[in-house]
Length: 264
Image (tube, rainbow, N blue to C red; front, side):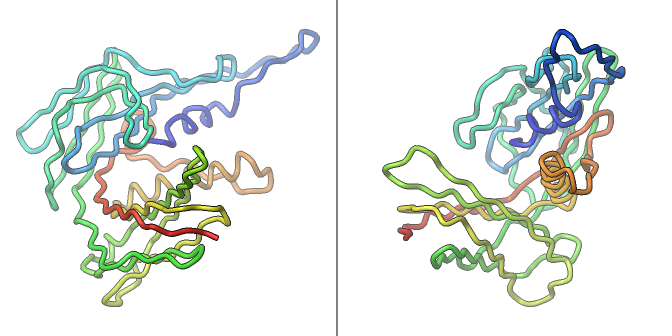
């Protein structure tokens, strides 16, 4: 859900304060609902539901309150409570939670439904197989996670995140990389990643198995960030699987490794 704040702001380009002697008529703009619901087996089923600003608004994330929100798995319906908090585990803002853990299923699907006034947002995503990491090693600035290739070609989408820690610094550099390995039929899948030249005492590596929709959402958000800061970059539309809004609804399987690794 880390992209939700950026996505909400990106939809309206940016907020700007004009000098009094400038007369500029801003075009009429539509607000957009933005949803990020990334679910993890064994963890509470939660999401962030917000609304994009307009260029004339103050640049801030507009939380959507008092919506009727629920998940559905088969015949079971899990209602969500409107409650705003910062999830400490990953510093993600949440404003709808169920406190019901997501079952650790490897097949099937789960549905999302959000109703706010006269607007209805829906989405469906599937459960993904566990990520099967056989080894995770670090050498200097290079990280390699090796996975057993038990995935179908349409299911080989992964993400690696690295968090660098140093006892004398409160800042935690974070690096992330996406992998589309649909054409890789080798018995093992090697996910290589290179982190920055930053002093560290240890690092945490998180390897995630993600769906195609989640991969396309993250990739398009990354390209949108590049285009926002680089006027020569080709703009990329944000990929979404939310009907009636923008954002992502997905299930993720993860493995985390804490490695003692001093650098330099």
